[in-house]
Image 1 (tube, rainbow, N blue to C red):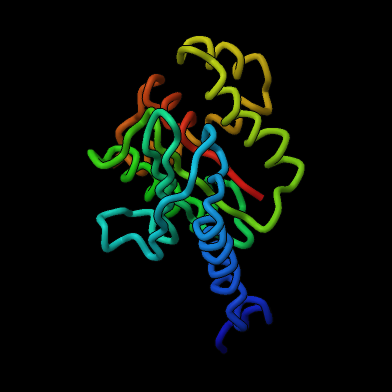
Image 2: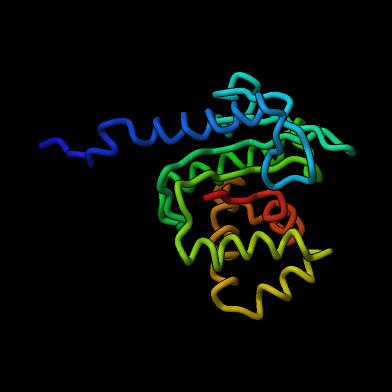
Length: 190
């Protein structure tokens, strides 16, 4: 017997959410608005399904210009995503992010990798988003790791990222500096 999906799944809910995110950034482009997660900027270009530009993260590529730099946001839109090392879709997202993070097209100082969700639950908001913010606000991987290791819940989430990145890195462990740099460029919107 074939498995039945939910009405949301079989009715194209995920596609509709992706189109909603794409439409939101299209409007931002039209009104010359700011892209999130960046310093004051203006969206200058959007590309839907960016794999034809060589990116593994394919839902949306947003280019924005700030006074200092040009920035790229690679966005994966997932209506409902479980942040877990056991979740196949999350593994795919992190693997695509890792490929893009290591691409010569990606500027690790100015570009961002974004997961857009319908909403963040308390664990995502209080532990994962906070963990990613720690990476952005600490000046070195040792400061970042020292802060994270003080709190069991944050360490568990960092270990999840470390495990997924090792899988994405062909089973080769990722060093602390790369883990910190990766977490600095990842953000979640919900």
